[in-house]
Image 1 (cartoon, rainbow, N blue to C red):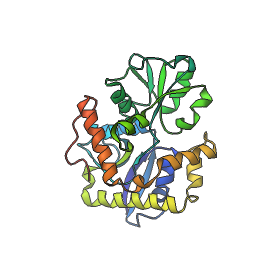
Image 2 (cartoon, helix red, strand yellow):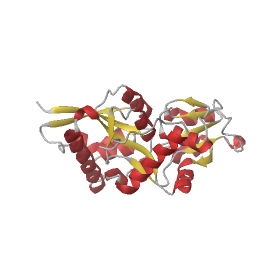
Image 3 (spheres, helix red, strand yellow):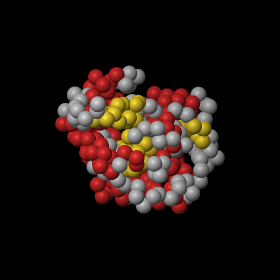
Length: 277
């Protein structure tokens, strides 16, 4: 019987596009199957605290909290330029003090929440919720502002909201590095050989997706039912790139910088020296 590996990732188009070949085709061979577990990124972060999944998409911020149980893999990441979280508010609140504002956040261990804390130099006064609830909460006046991720970059205007700060742009201007958003982590009890094989399979899955972009269309759209085709295409183009296949030296430098800044600000625990597989 083939070994079954549980793989948690989000239903967002970038993940379903990038990992379609791995979970729906025979990349792994007959002796290994990869079982998808789709969930919101903060739910995946939460489940990683209990090391529930063997392979999982995580926020880079969450990785620092679960590094005793997980390795960082070089493939499958969401990292780049011009793709960071935005802070948005209602037009009449443009000049609000974010340090005192009640901010809707997509989760306490998301990179978006960490970036806001780094930007403010303090722990934000956050109200945590599923990312899809952030814009409605701000538009309704339940929160003063919100940190939006994923396709929110393309749709916040539909809620009558305006941008306060682009946290990704702030990060890039401050560090000169791309913004690390999400990563793939492998549970350490898999062992280095199997984790390394999964790392290679992830890279091959991303490469297959980029080479055959229409092959995953039905799978992607099945999990993006509330998004128009144009938004889905924008989402994939923004978050799936060369860093998704291989973090490389530049990507790893960005991860190291985020971990170091988070630790220095008291927002993250110190990173393990053997964080990377």
